[in-house]
Figure 1: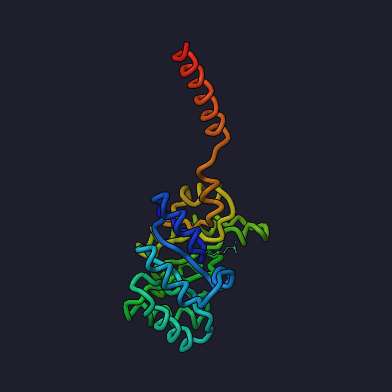
Figure 2: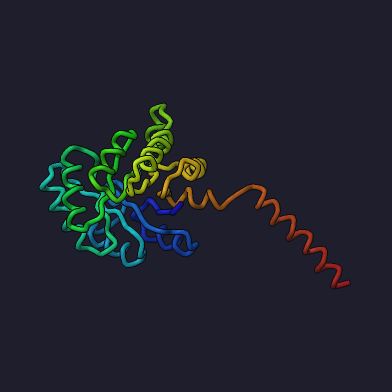
Length: 218
Ligand code: G3P
């Protein structure tokens, strides 16, 4: 399973990249709104930092607007992927942009049927929002599990991104559910590294090593 980082913050992207685990980046209008400066410049900087796919979302809702915005965003860099919310206009725009060789990421996917429609429209990726489903007492990961089963049955190449990840268990469950990619906030990436027994283990090794050092001095 690939790891994308779900942020538009360059510092977080650089720190995660230094760990050697970042295969791509996902942004959205909310994440970009938190960063200073022109969003197009922010996206350009992200694309020069990361060679993998970088998702940039359209804000137009009509087919022509989505296609126009998608073409503009695609000019930023070769690794830009156009993120499009799943709507009827969105699906039409996905087909047109993919036909032009522009990769798309169909976002705000909450049901397996939306995932199937996006795949039939030719999307390169879908983003299934598990955290927001959990928030309303649905099991978010069920959508991922069922979409993965459907894609396998019918041989769709569309890759499943598990998005709206809130904790390390979401990442584990994404892997078990057969997701291709988990897009993870920086905070959760750091949580994945940590384990209390690792901390205790390091302290114990260091304390025991002090005994060896003290013996050498005798
Ligand atoms: O990639 C989508 C993600 O940013 C949404 O996360 O926590 O706002 O549901 P959240």
